[in-house]
Image (cartoon, rainbow, N blue to C red):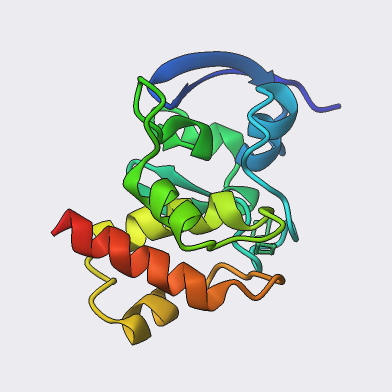
Length: 158
Ligand code: FES
Ligand code: FES
C-alpha cells in the first residue's frame, strides 16, 4: 500500500501544502490537486512539451517530474507570469499580437518555454528560436507566428 507524503510546493510565489503519493507527477499535482489547469497534458511521456513549467527558472517537463522532487524549488506556471495588476507578461502579449496560437492547448507550454528560451540566450535568430522551441509541439501549426512572437519578445527584452 502506498502512503501519501505531506509536501509544500512554492508555486508562483506562494506556498501550497498538499499530500501526494510518491508516484504523483508535478503535472498531476498542479492540475488535479491544486486546480492549476493551465499546465496541459498532451502525452504524459515527455514528447510534446504541453506540460512545460519553470522550476528554479529552468524549463522542465512536469509530466516527467515527480511532485516530491519539486519541493524546495520555485515553480512557475502559466497562471503566475502576468504582473500583479493583471498586465500580461511580454511573451503573453507577443503571442496575442502575433496570433501565435489557435486551439490554445500547447500555448501555456510554448509561452513558458519561450520565456526560458529568451533567458537562456537562445532567441538570437529565427533558426535558433525554431531549434530551441522544437521541444514544444503544436498541432495547429502555429510555428511561424510563434517564432515571430518569440523574436519580438526577445528583441524587447534586450
Ligand atoms: S505532457 Fe509532458 S511532454 Fe507531453
Ligand atoms: S495552438 Fe493548437 S496545438 Fe498549438
